[in-house]
Amino acid sequence: MSRRGLTLVEVLVALAIGSLVLSLAAATSQSSRRLSAAIDARATAGQRATAVPRLVGGALALAGRGLDGCGLQVADGGVRVRVHGVDLGDEQPETVEVFAGLDGGGRPALYHRTVPYARQPWLEDVTGFRVLAARDEDGTWRPIEHDAAMRWRALRVELSWTDGDVRSYELRLPHTPCAEPLA
Image (cartoon, rainbow, N blue to C red):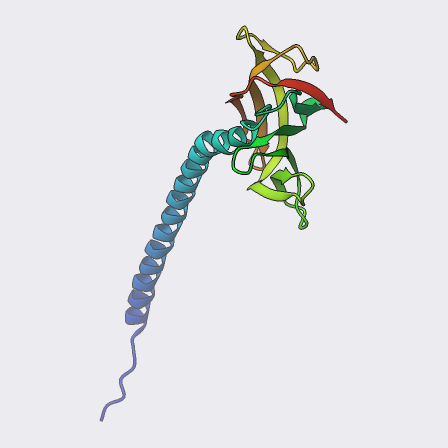
């Protein structure tokens, strides 16, 4: 029975092959992470382009529905919107607020709150929400004016995200409400 060990050349060849396999595995893993990040970024951009107008626009669609009053209140600086209208589901007056803030863990989010109930995080990673302007009945974009005679057809809102992305959205208001100041 012979006890033959590995020669130095055999050990070096085995180490070289092992190093090559590990570096190929690392390169494949890094490439997969980059591809995954690119897919996530594309999906996020798509969601921001389509989901945000639907969600926020859906909340604003209540503005003025079934009311004699204005139906829309905007805080100074446009950082909070309060919408008044009648929910057609139960035909009861309803008030909804949309604003950006921090959740209990300090993470930024866009909130949707049916007054007087607690706020609910609606969209994560939103660091800012502002109403920039409104389009009047003549189709002209103007700063928000608190005038009961002025009827609005659309709002232009801006959302800021934790990744630095800032997007502006034009949201149609089907009931042409007027705007009042929100204290």
